[in-house]
View 1 (cartoon, helix red, strand yellow):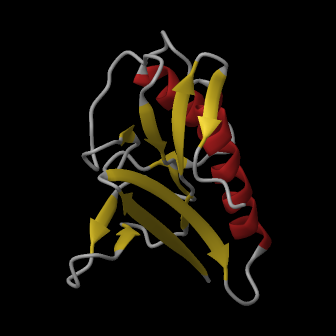
View 2: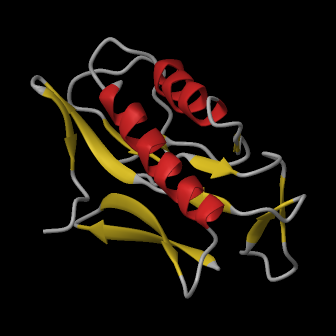
Length: 150
């Protein structure tokens, strides 16, 4: 099986957001490949996090990479601006902005549904999906990942 752990920290009124999907026990090779490609999608998106680019540039980089492997891109939950509010909405990226880049990639359909517990989300076809996320600052020297483990 696989499990995604999505962590949010609020420090001094500012948010940080990061997610990792980890294998549990014996995991099928095709599921491990999904995790690899999803993490690659995260870094493809981060590469686009530079001043003057649009949020759509990030999305395009993620989608193109995921779809080249035949995977679906979950559209119900997307990356977002982040700061004093958990979800902020930039369109054109500017130096000093901070983003939560979080591709969610599905082995089958990108369509999802929330379970009755109000929290758990699964794909409608019940195939595996993976989720990786970093909080990224847009700086004058390019994207800076703020949520890397030390």
